[in-house]
Image (cartoon, helix red, strand yellow):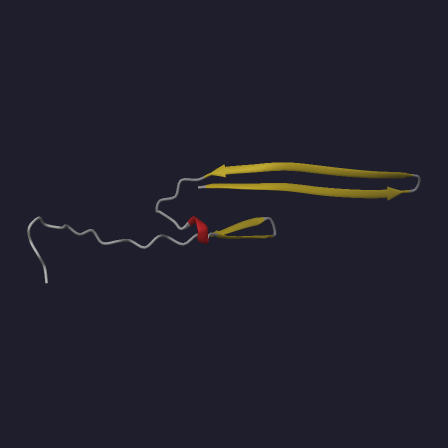
Length: 74
């Protein structure tokens, strides 16, 4: 799973006879290996006080079964 984000901050300062504007931009990319299969299309993210919170539901486990040749089950 890969998380990507673009960040941009702007700052303006006006004092007396000068005016200063500062713009900072950056791109972040992190790749994580998760211990289980997940539903990436249902992922949700929120950012609060500089903390990124991800909620990604796991895929349901499917039961393994065997189909035997020539045996018909009713």
